[in-house]
Length: 111
Ligand SMILES: [Zn+2]
Image (tube, rainbow, N blue to C red; front, side, top):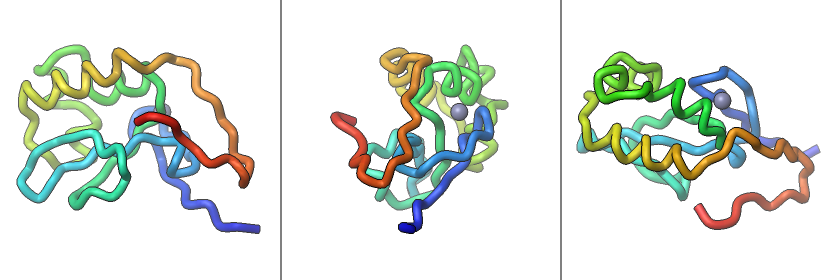
């Protein structure tokens, strides 16, 4: 059987195939961004493609963001712009997520 890399969502602690999660990265310059390629340099943290997980990981405001799990996971310095970017990203996700772990599943459209 083929080895599937697994990662843990920092919000709900679910363990999923890496490609089913979205990677957030803190770049070497200290910026926080959504890593749609999964290949950016820097410290990464993973979230499900669920709005609920994003909300719970980043909080409802920049102030909550400062004490959020995502910031803790990334050892990042929070800023309002990063929160806005992540918050906007979360708005286009839904709470439904397909959990298709079959080996032939080739992933993710768009991103
Ligand atoms: Zn999750």
